[in-house]
Image 1 (spheres, rainbow, N blue to C red):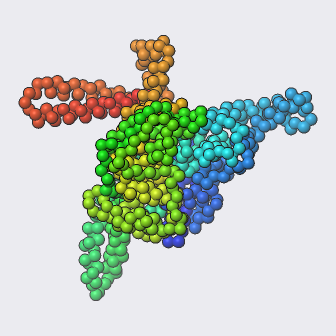
Image 2 (cartoon, rainbow, N blue to C red):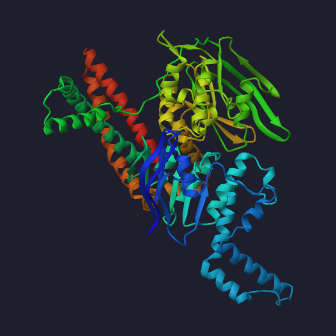
Image 3 (cartoon, rainbow, N blue to C red):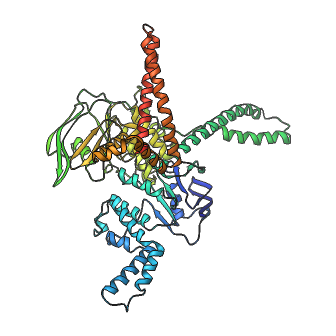
Length: 628
């Protein structure tokens, strides 16, 4: 059943074409993500779907008699209402049914049935028909998971993050036929994101969303639409499938462009000869030449941010925290926390919203002081601080002026220098956009510009507070590459699990009540360890029951039944691969014992064994993760 059809839609602003004659549809049960660079027109497309922006041409057709809910970046809530009023004054059949039931119930208790539109029997019948009992239970679960527990609070008193979570709750609670969401994971902590992933996997839900959370894309979405160069390409699969097929497309496109360039050179020589007697055939050849020229001048692939700025050398002393404690009233943030940063260390700070992650950053930056303990900063440390509060760019300045205020030319790691214009070009601001005013940039483009201003100040200790919010996937990938090559220290607060897993050496996990676990590994490894700790805290009889003989096998089978086909297949493959990898490792270790002075072979086999050990560890961790 088709819920939404977009037919030959076009939109431009001046000379900038956002999309040109694009078409796609959303059917019942589809979970589709739109992926595009910042400034490509995603927000404008959502506004057209919502009816607050008009397309230049084309049609948007929603199926009649379906309910649609939008979660956008500029949501509006009635600030005078409480959370309870916002939820229970919603205009949907479930709320009406619950209100009728409560009114009938109250009238019987008060012995007054004269002003009641429905009898209790009729109200009960409606409750059962709609399964409104489950709906009310669903409301409580959603509010609990999104930590909106006090329903008496006025919306005007909520933080920005709480308001975003309430807007999300209202969308989910109203159970629309089609949900259209823009960055639903912003302002959610990791536990909330993982719950939302599970919730949205319901086959009855139909989704169209924009998100740059790659784990979220992989877990939730069944198709991906990429908006690129004013056109769209649809991929019927998850994020992993999208990456694979996009790589194949770019490889084919690159080969076609190379072929066109060779043909273009030959045809160019012919056209320049300008033969006097042109026949119809030669004219058609000239026309074909212009087609070839257009194809040959296409860019081979997406521009990537290649940025390796010169970094001041770090001394032996970097940042040292010695038994640092901090509290706000009765709320403990840190209790006797110690850590000595080493050169090149990359650490992620994780934990629920409000536990004090940003407080630790402010302590290190000396923006606030600890209650107890000491923080020592080395003389050579130059901080580069990307903060949510720091995103204050002058809207009346041009993009290039923002960079030139810092430096006209920037020294690079290889000894060369880059002009402000060249640097902006590398950061996906082409010359045509550099003289645009900041106020005309999209939210993601502003974040990218702000991030650039932080990175070009030659820091050697980067502090990044939610750097991934509103950045497109291309920028995220290239930022990851930059940070992987960055020789200094990096301290990150982020709810982007993919980003954290790819970058960090270990994790500061804020567990509440001032307790911070310094865990050696990335987020996924910490999560597996945390789950194993919970299991070890179970009564001994429970553990023994799960680990004895056939019962262990039964438990694994039971878990497998609940897995998706994709995960079950992956689990089976790992279980086949692990014994083979172990056997190969053992064979190489035995072979190593009989080698005496063949140092070349010894070194080669030792490397193979090390690689096998790493692969076995990775497969083992993945096996545990799937079973968890």
